[in-house]
Image (tube, rainbow, N blue to C red; front, side):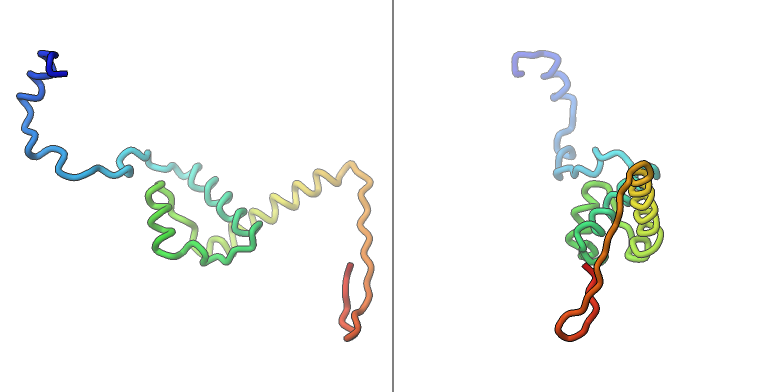
Length: 123
């Protein structure tokens, strides 16, 4: 680089005392998230919580919020997870099950009995 005259001209003309005083963060390189992508990520996040049985507040810790903020994502509120996202996941799952079972001869058999304490069990 020291042999390149163009590079020497550019670096000589720049005031480097004010530049690069702090390390830049990744946030400036992460594009703003559009509403369609945010909604898709919210649904995937909610489904992951439901499938793994995690509490809605599992990721509300400031450490998790900071982690997701670095990725440009804000997790849904507990209220959103408890109602609209849960309803959406339920309806999507129900539709998939109905589609699978629509043309099949699937039968569901249950057996009811009681344990030694006379509590009802469904097998």
